[in-house]
Image (tube, rainbow, N blue to C red):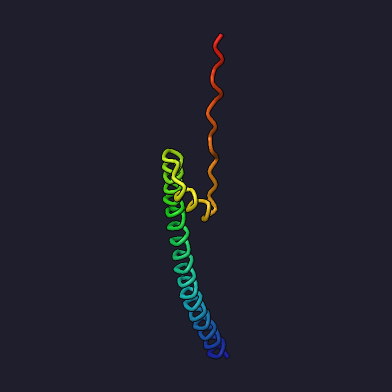
Length: 93
């Protein structure tokens, strides 16, 4: 009887070890996928900053040179420019 109890306990321990190893491997693969996604997000943020800087530079050049081709390029990509109006001339008395 004691032998059967010990055998059952050993079998349950073996099953628990196998389940633990399987869950550990699954957890490792999930962590790897999460890390890859986080890396993609980080790269997207870096590209976003570059895109913002590039768009700001194009807006500045288009405004400075009154370049219609750049204005059209920006407008075609959803970037609108606000034209700054010159302040009214001062009235001399």
